[in-house]
Amino acid sequence: MAKLLSGKDVAASLNESLKKRVEQLKQQHIQPTLAIVRVGNDPSQCAYERGAIKRCETVGVTVELHTLETTQTQADLLACIQQLNASPTVHGVLLLSPLPHGFDLHEATACLEPRLDVDGTTSGSLARVFSGSGNGFAPCTAQACMEILHHYNIALEGKTVAIIGRSLVVGRPVSMLLLHEHATPIICHSRTQKAHELAKQADIVIVAIGRAQAIGAEYFSGNQVVIDVGTNYSEEKQGLVGDVDFDTVEPHAEAITPVPGGVGAVTTSVLALHVVEAAEKRCSQQE
Image 1 (tube, rainbow, N blue to C red):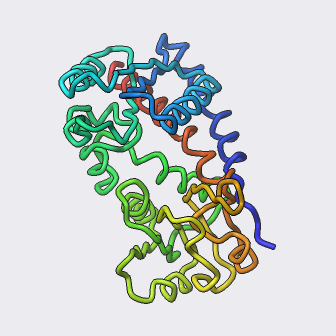
Image 2: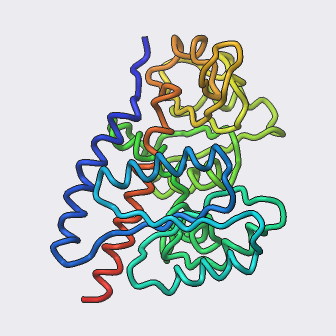
């Protein structure tokens, strides 16, 4: 039986560390603050917003809500972001996406200063992920994968990591984060020939393709660490499932993240972590 890599345990450990760091900031009269910007009332975005607020409150990070109606304009959204850029008390901004019809996400993220981009959506943040320097942060989901690997002391240096999926949210940024830690990432995507054979040769497999239970036992050779990023609703199981077919893959894995309770459980803690890091960085610049 594979070891379950519980994201809840990782989140709990991060939260305890963050509480101490927030208290240290408060002693210097700095209150870490996240601003959440939402346009409209998309149910999934509202659910994520509630989770982010709860996690931030747990560790002592203040949250400001900035909501716009779908009847407002792109100019209104840009004005909101520019106001947050200029705020002396806001340390991070989370712009919930996708945006409703009539709003331009690319223009909105380009308006946000990378130092506030705690979810890694701007070009400046992605440049930092690739270069290892500058302002900005890695996307929270990509960083959550790394936090799980670190928490469970899974060695990365010299290891081969197959990443199935090439999105800017997970696949490409997590490959760079792994490279910075001297792992050897291999990105597989929809046009990769014999992707299952490449995955079989890897020490660690990270799956982020957004297709329910699409990756089966044929991708695994045994004794591998499996990080399943996917979160999909299954009508058959009447619940959430990952991109990995857990029941068939688990017997072939050394360790595996569950869904739910895996990567998703860590993401909002990473969001809070980025806000705290942004507050600490601003504090050090003011000294």
